[in-house]
Image (cartoon, rainbow, N blue to C red):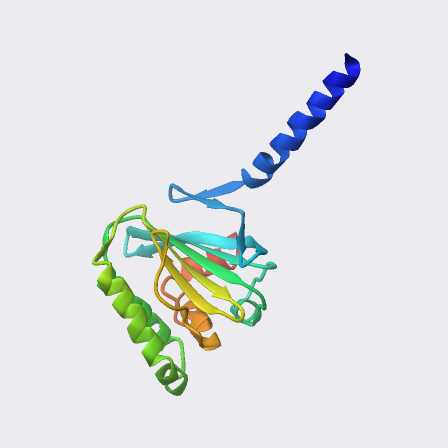
Amino acid sequence: MTRQLVLSSILCTALLLPALASAATVEIGGVKLEDRVTVAGQPLLLNGAGIRYKAVFKVYTAGLYLGQKAETPEAVLAATGPRRMTITMLRDIDSAELGKLFSRGMEDNMERAAFSKLIPGVLRMSQVFSDHKKLKEGDTFLLDWVPGTGTVLTIKGEVEGEPFKEPEFFNALMRIWLGPKPADWQLKDALLGIKKK
């Protein structure tokens, strides 16, 4: 009888462990973010997360996932292996407008010559956002860098077209939030895991 109890308690623990391991979440602006995700078979850690504000309005929650923690933009851009940026809308927004803001954010944080090489990809990304018309509060999209594949854009759970092959494209996107002219300075610090004192 005792042996049976021990075995059943071991079995219960074994069944609970995966649930406990995957249960860790962080809540930012009412959005729950897993502290760990898997991209292309690689485990990634939540490097940092925060809210994008426009004036006093909350626009979206963003989370940056990396293979290992990074506290500087340079370390994020130099990271090898898969990376992910997840964005969840906190208000309804015109998708085409968001696509334009992303394009502007990339352009503002790059040298003109480097940006001009990415224009075909930028135009394609803008078109993808335009096709969606609206992103509603609670909608999520993912920007994944997968080595050997490219940047994979997933909107509301659907992968959008072919990956963006240029390795520079993902880093150009990251500069929207981490570049010298970020979309939101507080969000930049939050994504880098920098705690305000």
